Image (cartoon, rainbow, N blue to C red; front, side, top):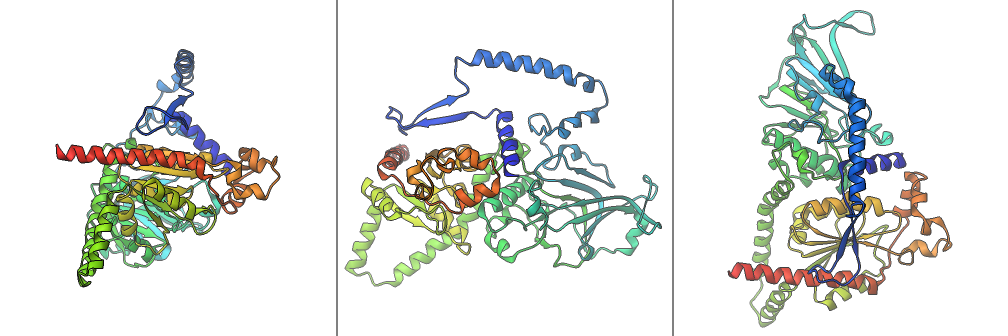
Length: 530
């Protein structure tokens, strides 16, 4: 399963024309101290590449020519072969393009994406949580009726089933997601289901089950798709949650008011019949942790998402600062306190590095030595150990005020979303995680405007070096191990691997990050003085 997923995602990367950038560990005249070059896009290869692309385009046009002269719906054949390039389709609607123009009183479902199904219902939409059903009522004279299992006329025009979660290709996870029945009935049946709550804006139905509890999946499978959706509707939308969790609402209580202006509904916990003029069931997702402006439907950009996070957390951060000031004033202004305040001011002038620590696998075994080395270089150092109960506003404040973030590949790297543009993000890449580290965090970090460094460890820096023979594929050929399946990747490289950094080797990256941060601080100070 993992192999197939990786192959699909690699195809997506190539299809979108992403460039692979390799940063060499060499001295250079650049302020950031990295020599970068594009592989696969060199000047020598460009003529041949252009010729091949032109030849492919001509060949492809002959293949598709018959379809261009037939009815418009035949173009949807592209979807059946897995072509999901958003540049070929309209992104004006957040939900599936084939359902972007849904007529009143109809249900449209797009199941072409490997990532998620999505259905749109337009008209008189009513919920029934007891039967996990969403019903759309329309004129009785529409279409042909469908007979129920008993053989009697059930007055059903259309019946769809959907699990509104964005990991469609992972059967083991999808088996845990609640399923909804979407039913189209005649308007006469509406008299048997009265509206308890009438809404005048659309609803978005989605699940917070599955991998919810993992920060990466909470953003990738939830917050980011919800942000894109809310931008499309200008926050005039009601969120209806399946597998509702109070802790999830509390965790994102600062962000959610910036995504919707309306109270959130617990689908299974609210037995009232809610009526909507439109319902979108499921969320649209394209790439892993993508913050691609083309997916914002023209209503938002990558920086808009970042600005939204600032607006969401700023009030709470101000409250935290006020609380700290009150605690400080409660202390007697002794000489010792004054000395501590002076030392704190001096410390704040230094560039700040935050080390995201892991408590289980992929921990930095020589973390104390790393902290000392960073302090010796001149950094103000803070070690952050995020827990599930840690308030996100506190983490946001810590990272938003940092100049450099260091961490080993894993879900906690999602916190790079909290860093300011032009800050430095150093991701330590354990054995067997190269592709995932770059795809899930490296490339999105660059899109967000961060200075990204991927530090790929050597086999000698892995705890696996002491468990396997030096010629074992686990050390020498991780790709061959990954190709055996996701269970091998998880068991070997994710669950059983720790890191002992070669500090002499890592020192070069950290020193360059320091010089860059100092130069940036001085440049900013100079700009402000002007």
